[in-house]
Length: 158
Image (cartoon, rainbow, N blue to C red):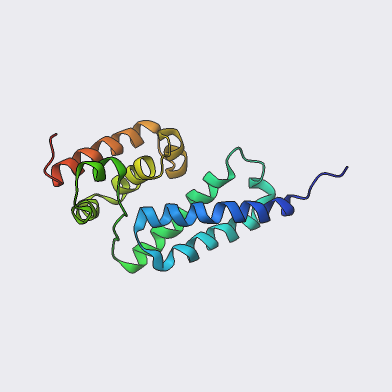
């Protein structure tokens, strides 16, 4: 029996990874206009490096890191920030989703990313650190500060 070509695995990887990328980028930015393009661009880059990344423990984390960088570049070119969809634990406490959206827009981009990746998408701190290329303690700091800032903005208890 012959071993499968790495290229064969990419088609399946693409099918499973594209929806994850689009959901993640949409959650991080709230901007659906370019999410699909950015996700596909990240996967094109992955296709060119598939020979190397197919053997990674989590090739989807590598592609997510690339997609986030591409989205950041696009946002910088657009010179505007876009809101996140919501953060699960805050939405449970606040009945008006618009207030949450407004509060999220006030967070720094890094706080917004960390809070969304952890609470909305369920990524553990270690994976967020890997994706954003920062230490776990930095992720925990941004997560704590982001949650505190959300509570302050929304008028909740500290």
